[in-house]
Image (cartoon, rainbow, N blue to C red; front, side, top):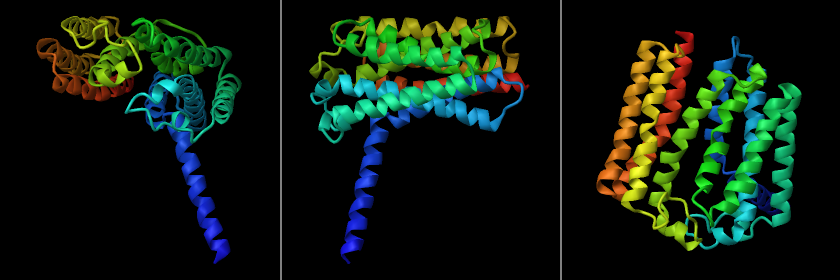
Length: 298
C-alpha cells in the first residue's frame, strides 16, 4: 500500500512538472509557430521527406519554446500583476528561475543544433536571431515603446522563413513574400488581442496598442490600415505567378473578410469587434498558407 501511494504521488508530481514545462514554452502558441515553419518547408520542397520534416518541426518547436521560456523568466514579476499570466509556472514559483533558464537554454541549443546539423547554418542562425529578437528586444520593449510590436512581428514572421531556408539554404524572393505575409498579419492579430486585454496589460504598464491611450480611434484606424495591406499583397502574389487564379480568388475572399473585420473595429471600437478580429486572425493565416500549398500542387 505504501509503495502504491508513493508511485501515485510520483506520477502526479511528474505530470504536474510536464504541465509546467508545457506552460513555460507556451505549447499552443509554439505549435502554431511550428505549423508556419512546416508550411515554409513544404513550399520549398519538391519531395517531402517525413523524417526531415519531423526534424524541422522539432527544431522549430525547441527554438520557439526557448524564446517563450526566456520571455516568462524576464517577465515573471510583471506576470504576477496580470490576471491572464499570474499562474504561469515561473511567476507562480512552481518553476525556479534557474530551472526555467536551464530548460530554455537546453531547448535553444538543441533546436539550433538540429537546424544546423540536419539542414544548414542559415536556418539555424535565423532561429537563433528570432530567439534574440523575441526575448531580448521585444520583451523588454513592451513596457517602454509601442515599437515592441514591430520587433515582435519580425520574430513572429521568421518561422516560414526557417522552414523554407532549411530546404533551399538561401533567402529568395518567394521566401521574402512568405515573410511579408506573416509579418503584416502579426499586427492585426496582436493588436486585436491587445485590445481585448488592454485593461490587464495596463497593470504591467505594457504599451502595445498603436495609441499610448489604448483603445482609441487612432489604434483602430491604424489596425485597419495595416490589415488592408494584405489586399495588395495577395494581388502581388498573383501577378508574379506565385499562385493560380482560383487560389488567388480564395485568398482574396479570405483577405477581404479579414480586412472587413478590422474595419468593424475601426467603426465601432467595441470589444465584440476586437474579439471577432482576433478569432478571424486565428484562421486567416493558416488557411491562406494552406492555399499556397494547394496552389503549388495544382
